[in-house]
Image 1 (cartoon, rainbow, N blue to C red):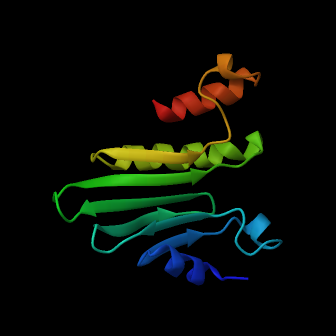
Image 2: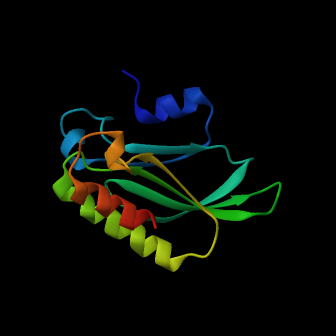
Image 3: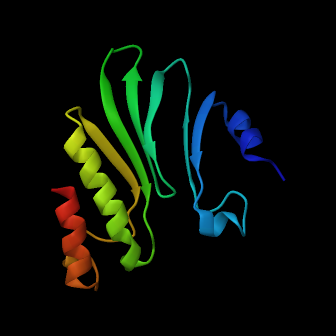
Length: 130
């Protein structure tokens, strides 16, 4: 079985940040976390903040000279825990003025018409994204 470092090297990336979801990592070494991989020649990445469910970085493009924020999320599957992630994103949003790209698995939907979920879950996510 390849380790995380072996996989990163085989893919050709020179740098990485990995955060582990503590609950799943106990069972399977590489499951339930987030990997952020990049090549040094393309950009400079500075880790701003991380948790077991998020990575927030400052990206500086070497060719264009632009900087922007990038966040990756793997939100809790249980709705009762997601408020922690939404609070973290709200705090980050209030502290930056750069362009910001956010991606990942939010484990929720933006509009109740997409699926049957409770209105309170949808409202909490929409408030966070405003």
